Amino acid sequence: MTLHSTRAEVQKAVLVGLQLPTMSEQENQSSLAELSRLVTTLGYQVIGQMSQRRSSTKGAVVLGDGKLRELARWTGGTGVVAATFVQKKHKAALKFEDQQEPESEEIELEEEEGPQAPKQKADVVIFDCDLSPSQLRNLESATGASVLDRTGVIIEIFSRHARTKAARLQVEIARLTYVAPRLRETGGGEDRGGGGVGGKGAGESSLELDRRKIRDRIKELKGELASIGQEHVTRRARREQEACVALVGYTNAGKSSLMRAMTGSEVLVADKLFATLDTTVRPLYPETTPKILLSDTVGFIKKLPHDLVASFKSTLDEALNASLLLYVVDSSDASFRSQLEVTQKVLAEVGAHETPSLLILNKQDQLSPEEKQSLAAEFPEAIFLSTRDSKDLKMLREKLVQFFESDMIDQEVFIPYSNRGAVGDVRANLKVLSETYNELGVQMQLRGNPTDLARLIKKHQLEPTKK
Image (cartoon, rainbow, N blue to C red; front, top):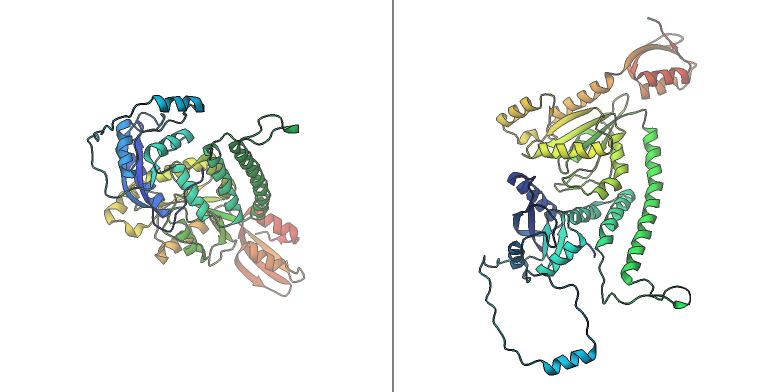
């Protein structure tokens, strides 16, 4: 099986939601609306949706018989799963049956009463849940159309948006892991290669060969990713002594827009899901002393496939190693609370839930005064912000500086003129509060982390001035 790709013409899709006992009607509709945005991001045209209450997602076709026939009206299918096994008969039996079979009269079957067939025909059916390989096969048989589940859609979006080598490797591993159990025989499925020494034995079927190739490819990709991961570890080690802030949050919450506004970097900003898959690290602009680095990370979404979470562990490690997390949410989205919960849950899986954090209620310009007042009462410590307002950006910048300065200490040192390079090194790594010059050198009042202060004093053999 290969994931569906968009052709030149816009393909039409119908969405199917399953409301489980643990889900409310509102949660079900919110999940379907999110799936609609995912599908639109792929370039499909959503022409309709349907939903059914089910006790579980188990079963041969997930849906009930009536709903399955209703779905088939969207696609022009039969609504019945075709038999997957037909017993073969030898030629003599087939010839005997042909001779004995009387001419049968054509019987017209009455169409089952129900809703009329939609005017537009769907090319693709997309389920808002994960489907097993057998369920996918049965649903395609009954509908006569391509069938995708939520995981398949998300992986396809990731594969289209990955740009760096690391992101492409991560997505390819997740895609192959998803595709491997869904491979099907193409042809009869009976032909086997010669087996063993001397050609004895049945050998491997084409399906088994394909699966083995996928396993080998995944192993090769993981090896490449591990080598790139070492480079990321080395880069992070260089930044260990620097203040690092990670932007985390739901996809399309405005993280990249905030990144661009705070750093002046040309990161991709687009109104679509998963526009950012690669971690970008840039210093705040104008630069602070000591330098504060800001990193943009991959966005989260409900029911994010575990394979993708595992594949993007190196990206999520940016959040794990950050000194401060900024949880960015779209405050104009009524479902932002559940989105925040999803983000916190995924970060907890990688161990980043204990990192200090600030909540950023983004897009406050789209809130009414009443909505803003209500949110301020609900989240008293949150920071309201709009990336289009320079005052908001300046306020956030000051908050970040204050956060990192809270752990700093002041120290006065004297640097003689003979100590070459010391003044430049100190200015690059510490905040200079004041400096005075005399005939022997410069007296500096410094502010910085105790570790940085101790390191520079030892490196340049400086003498701290006693007050």
